[in-house]
Length: 290
Image 1 (tube, rainbow, N blue to C red):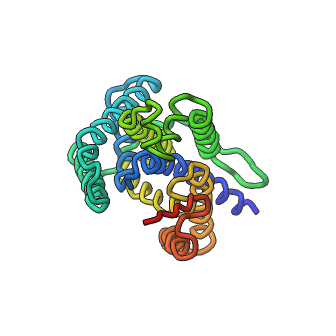
Image 2: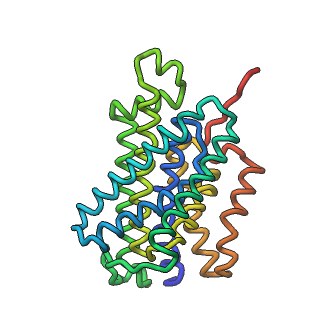
Image 3: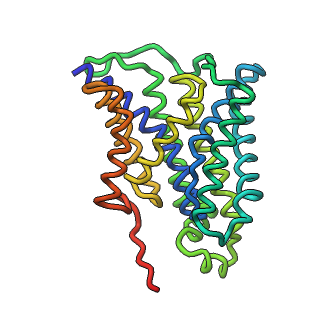
């Protein structure tokens, strides 16, 4: 029982981080129609930016987070304005290849400045353990779940209640109709990329705190694809369900079967979902008439 509880909590923590990362992916896709293959690298850049500000420069935690947010937003705005906006109307394959090239560029840039060695960072969240139903569970994993839940709830309220959130939903539904009522589609595109960068920053910081600051963060970010395929490319609630499902499944397979198999299982789920339900569990089925 204690093993199950440990694996469950670890899986929920991993899934919560995956949900945050996948949220940025879905935001960009919903608003702009772009499949961003560089989402994992946004986590990587966010983690290393925070590490630079917090450890190397010795800034207070809150200031380091603000520095990370500013850098993440600026990077997202530059990418949207100067890399992807000129490609509007181009073949979708061209846009996908650009995001793949962007991921390689960001990874190479991080390696150029920081190398590939693991960087240790002082723990932000408490590392002691508590007893939960007979299992010893690290507090930092519980805090990750709570923080991710708060952030995801805040994003949900933003989309449902705020003026800008409603504008983003309008653009996602119909760009032409949104333009006719005075919504700036370009501004919404930029906002979507900025919010995606912030969600990736938070996910990167949490992952760096419970694990380490290294290149594996980008590899972890690749799990975004099984998450969004499972939950639905255009579904925000689907990112939560997909993230938690993949996180728990990966930990359970690792604990009860084989850690190597656990790395493969999310992609087996991805292929299975594509075969059975290509739009995901919560994805919107769009019927286009020609």
